[in-house]
Image (cartoon, rainbow, N blue to C red; front, side, top):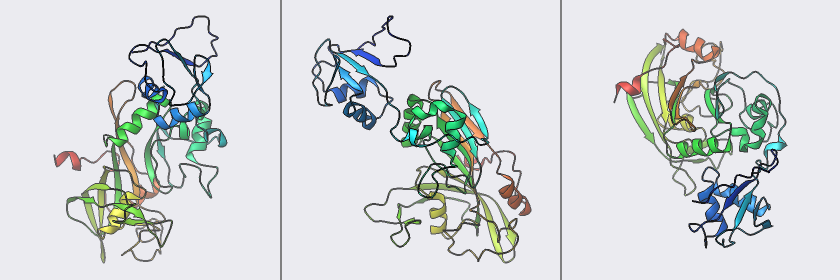
Length: 340
């Protein structure tokens, strides 16, 4: 394996990485060698760095197809994500559940948009993260590796380094991250089940997704279990625990509506829900989708240790659930563990 050059005379501010090409990588294309030398950085980012002359061989900028020769010196200057500096830090209160040198875990409140986009170019979680941890400007998307809908509350993990981000993305791709949500649905489905149905954008409404078998639809799989049920004449309501095996936009909301059990308060996926009216503390007047990311489990990208966090729902959802007689709310449910 090529050894990293330890240049004792280098300026402390020099962040370039240096690799000496040995027999293993001699004759290999630069882009392929970089992928092996820096496995924690995505190939697309490495290609961007080469194209931007942030990678040099023997002091010269080269193309990604450049063939390496024994003894070549590769210098890499890691570059921040091209869009990161476009967003301004904005101090805001953040409920930080866990923090170390590699990751942050935050409990996102309902109503907070995660990432800047059309109509929400400021005041997002990303802006708050940049103020809380300014070094995140050098990590793509300020370290955000997965998202929650604006009106969904709960736990999210944020990477503080490129290496941690690459590791977490791989865990998500391998479906090894445990993401459990609490939801309140109209009607009571079977005690437990799995909804496996591809999801694509609704051609009639660009803001809405649906179960679809179009070529562009993406596979999606949601597991659910009924924690408890309640009767509110004439309706029956279910407290569901849902686990994601994939992470499609609006996945739980789409899948639950698809099987005839839309989430209480959902402003978009409302098939079967009555018109919103009445006290917002009741299920008929609840002002957002009743969905909360209650548990998060993953392998720490640096230590390899398995870690799990739980957070109870925020006041609005907790009040709704307590009013329906659901609880306790201060501890995780074990419905999935009990069914093993």
